[in-house]
Image (cartoon, one colour):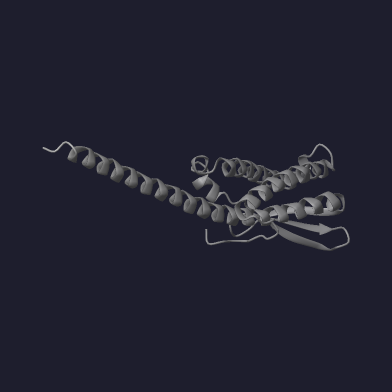
Length: 197
C-alpha cells in the first residue's frame, strides 16, 4: 500500500466534512434569518391590531375623565364576546363605543422562540407583551368601574382612575412603538381592526 494515498484520502475526507458543515451552517443562518423576518412581520401585524385597541381605550378614558360627572354611563354586552360603553350627557347628547380586546395570539405562539433567534427583539417583545397585559387589565377595570359605579367611594373615583390609566396606557404604547420600530424600521402610525392572523 502506498503511504501517500492515505493522507490524500484523509485530506479529501476532512475537506468534504468541512464543506458539508459549512453548507449546513449557512443553511441554518439563512433559515434563522427567514424565520426572524417572518416573526417580525407577524409581530408588526399584532402591534397594529393592539394599536387600535389602545387608541380606542384612550378615547374612552378621555371621555370618562371629561364627562363623567355630567353623563350617565352604562355597559352592555355585545353580541360577540365584548362590551359596549354607552353614555348619555345631561344635555341629551350621547354615544357609545365598543371595548376591544387585546390580541396576544402571535405573542403567545412565538415569544419563547425569540431568545434563541434575536435577544434584542425578545426584550422588546417581552416589554410590549407586558404592556398589552396592562392594557387588558385597564380596559377590564374601566368596564368593571362603570358597571359598579354605585359602589365607588366618591363620585369622581373613576376620574382619578382614568388619569392613572392614561399614564399607564402611554407607557404601554411606547413599548409597542419600540417593538414596531424594531420590526419594520418605521414609526407606528397605522392600526388594523383585523388581519389574516
